[in-house]
Image (cartoon, rainbow, N blue to C red; front, side, top):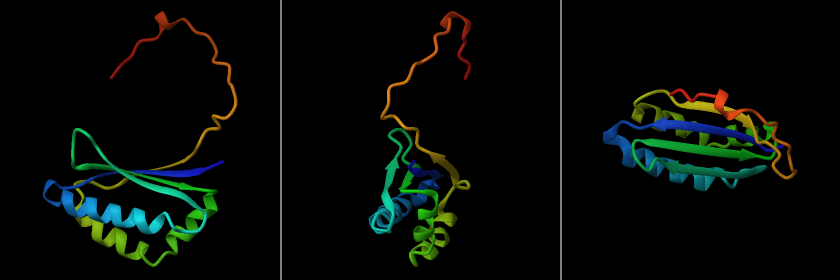
Length: 115
């Protein structure tokens, strides 16, 4: 299974360009780390202050190459002061979508959506 880390960041409005540049730089460096499948960065289409990072590794232990990359020591100290709130980091295992599944039936009239 692919080990994935998803990070959401919110830049202070006056620092959007700095955060964006640092994320692009980080992606170009980190995607070359051993056992890294890819390291994507994205910017929200409605709010330019919001960014996402999707880090994909061969396995959970592969993250050690990322954490031992000398660049990692420069990333947080540069980015954290530019953020409006702490990073929201999620660690997930990607689901296997290569096989058919049977979705259990249910009565959709019984389900209500709440925001």
